[in-house]
Amino acid sequence: MESELFGYDEGAFSGAKKGGKRGFFEEAHGGSIFLDEIGELSPRMQAKLLRVLQEKEIVRVGGTKPVPVDVRVIAATNVNLEKRMAEGTFREDLYYRLNRLPIFIPPLRQRKEDIPPLAKHLLNKINRDFGRHVWDIAPEAVDGLIAYDWPGNVRELENILERAVIRMAVHETRVEARHLPPLDFKAALESPRMAPGAERPPSRLADLVTAYEREIIQKALKDHDYNKTKTAKALGLSVRNLYYKLDKLGIERSGLQ
Image (cartoon, rainbow, N blue to C red):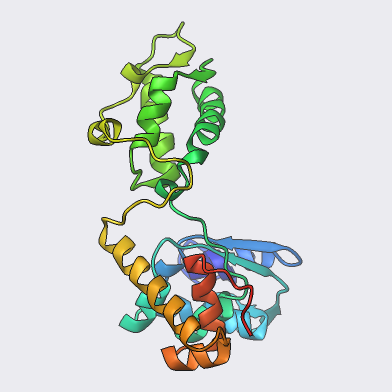
């Protein structure tokens, strides 16, 4: 990982290329680098990444000379970094270096109105990958997709559509409900359909914890006349961390002092 991100000098290890190799940070100089699954970095790599962000320079594996880099870092994770910090497996200083402009993408189960356009977009991609010509999804199949809760989010939706296309005859151009692999949506289909954007009753532990956290913060804001400094202090948070939670939980910022 270190040699991929920061590069290496000639002779740094067995099999190293003659003349060394530039790492991703050097390649991204003057631009952006996307670090996926940032929450899975080892403590050692977290320390090295923190140094790069603080000093704006890298040192190649086997090298001693710092190389300046000017890079915008975009990081992504599907784990709760705050929980990882509390457990001591993710550095707090690295978290605050990365968490300058948080962007939260709600899980697919909370934005089911996105499923029809997403499905059509993914079908176009699957057509290119598989050399097929499937351009439409039957209403019954769409209802089935919307009724499912998608614990695997968009990746799972793509996987289900790929499996459906593979099961289709070559001449078929529309995904029918019979093409979909079994999904646990029978009970949802039997219940009244919820309007797009309607609040779903939380059933998973993560949903319950999120709902409780939102309730506590909203009550604290009200108790302190929506003063962000007083609210943050009462909750034992920094103001920055309070703003992070407001964005994460979808709590309206307008009216805060």
